[in-house]
Image (cartoon, rainbow, N blue to C red; front, side, top):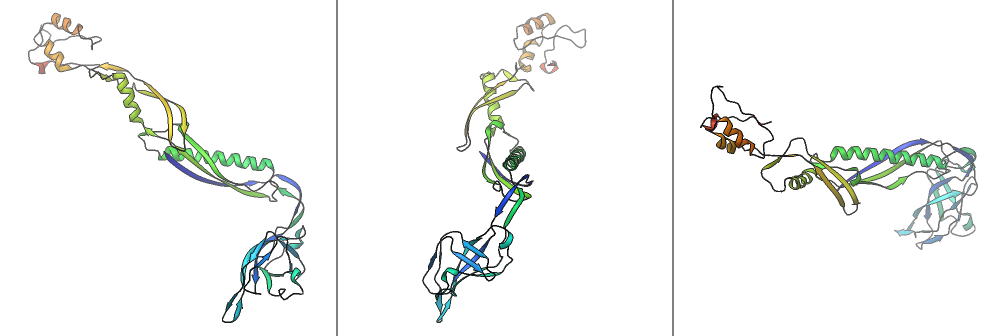
Length: 314
């Protein structure tokens, strides 16, 4: 059982268009410089920039407690995602930015809990825009699957050892991971990728040929295979790519011929005349046809020396 892996990534055009409303988002670092006790904050907690842009926390978090070192408070932090409260481009702000928590205003915690957004916020938009349509995703998926399958097959053919048999029906390709942006994502072009895995069961062709050969000859040592007549066919009934097992029917066609033992024939015809030689050779079932010739032509019997008797077998 052989395994081949391939990752394919390509860019595609987005062809959809519709009215889009999106909020700016960004990552922020939330600090606790108040006390050594952790502070829980719930999703939707408000954060505000010095310019008055409002953002909200996206999920519940616990800010770790500050540390006290040499009598001084050392703030501790956690990274959080913040999203603008309003749609549109107004909250697309370049970083770095400092944000406060208006909900703590009027308490001692107000200046001790704060956030910074080093990269700022982006992604806010409102209006008609190019988006990824359902058909865009389908076309991208089909194209990636097709290319991954083709490249994997080329790699299989290239890497399977020559003395092993590779059958298409004993190969299964799975795509465990697909990375395609969601439908209606605002963009002109998008990048998508797949990870594909092919599991291939191969076996030695000589093992199958030996089985067919044994069946054809049936242990008869007086027969041999005719060169170029060997053919083996395979029919896959079941393939378990996980456990590396398969049920495969195979059979073959082959032509055999009787082995002509020249030494035996020579001992039978030596010293005999042509009529006696003809009678002997006609009784041999390994011969389909034959002709007898003497040289020099005035000889009427075969030599007694077997080394002087020559056979031409076709």
